[in-house]
Amino acid sequence: EVQLVESGGGLVQPGRSLRLSCAASGFIFDDYAMHWVRQAPGKGLEWVSGISWNSGSTGYADSVKGRFTISRDNAKNSLYLQMKNLRAEDTALYYCAKDSSGGKEFDYWGQGILVTVSS
Amino acid sequence: EIVLTQSPATLSLSPGERATFSCRASQSVSSYLAWYQHKPGQAPRLLIYDASNRATGIPPRFSGSGSGTDFTLTISSLEPEDFAVYYCQHRINWLYSFGQGTKLEIK
Image (tube, rainbow over all chains, first blue to last red; front, side, top):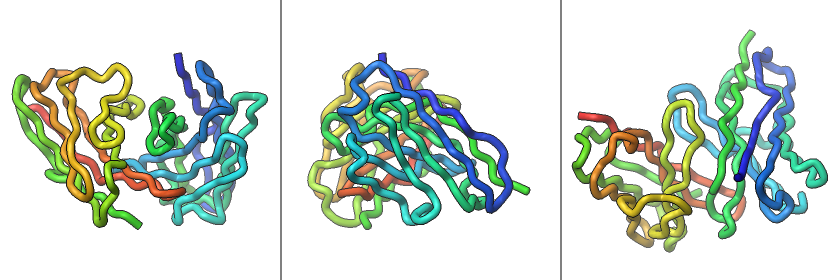
């Protein structure tokens, strides 16, 4: 059974940093690209960032480019999101998501972890 | 950037009725469109990929159709557990876009 478990969320002041983690199990982690997707309160889904299976390629939404860094450790079956210079508009539920075999959609998601940016 | 526009914003129906969701792309996306179901407090669930293929474990009452710029998700006969928010999604290179969602509520 595929499981994705996020951790590392919480309350943080504007301008500070936070690192999210996602522990993956139930599939061959280093066969798939991985992603972070978020949902701000009362809003829809927004893709944040993705990373290829071997970390050779990454992508970011314009809203986080230059502030967030995605990484992975295939030996630990783990995905990370380093978030710097956080803003109030980064407040959201952050989901870890697995790339599908077709590479165009997300076939498994975690339960999400809440990040609140507020003074 | 491809913009996905979903309609209606809210759909009010009763169990047993047919639900039809629309997703329109600002330019052709061929058949590369996915649909998700999202319930409060739960992880989003992939329903349909490549416009018309049901994901693993998705019941046959869910079907997708369309190509180019116009796509439809249909639930043939609503079950109580189907009331949720539905999103369409597309990817081109490292740009992943979601529609704004359609909320399916009980009438």
